[in-house]
Image 1 (cartoon, rainbow, N blue to C red):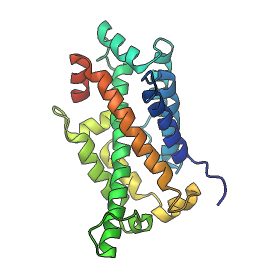
Image 2: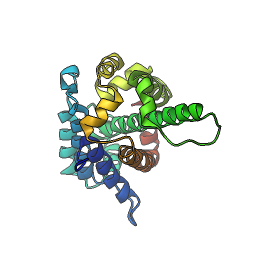
Image 3: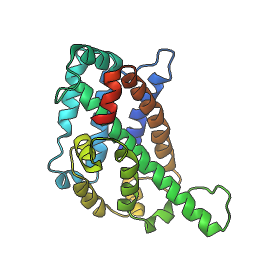
Image 4: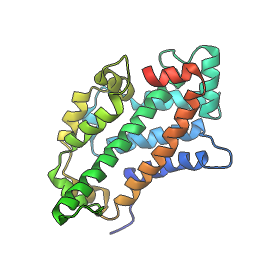
Length: 240
């Protein structure tokens, strides 16, 4: 198989850049790095021709939002602290609100990938007939629906927020209704064909998926710490 250079690997690498700065001697996330991550994120979404199915999605808005913010703020900590201090954090379209919503999108992708690995391990374990931890078998996911996987992840990420229905919370964070996303997932190719499109195999694809999951945990924890450092920020995580 030739050189693997696809949006999934680029997305994992981009998120790893954010995680690496968090794990540095001076933990931080630069707003400019967040801009790059957003650009790559939506490239990954559109890679399979999903743009036509998502006519209401305007990814450029989030990119432009953070790009403009990067001219004023070096790090997301500067951004959140300054906007809360200035009383603009809750304004519609504020970079601070966009960051809180992006956090949930990153978390949703992490949960989806973890559900995929859990499903693969459970299926393999069942076939092997033992209760010991089993290696992940991507081929077994061909029997499972992306819609089912997404639905479980959706409940895990968006249901816990008080004051909003899960659907309202999802729509605000992603910019799409749950039904639109589910309809698009129904039209995605089966996993084995996706592997061919990505120029991956059942072993190689585990690397970028694991990288994304592990990097996401680091990035999400840091974003939470930034918001939770103030009462206003903590409330924003719960309600926006």
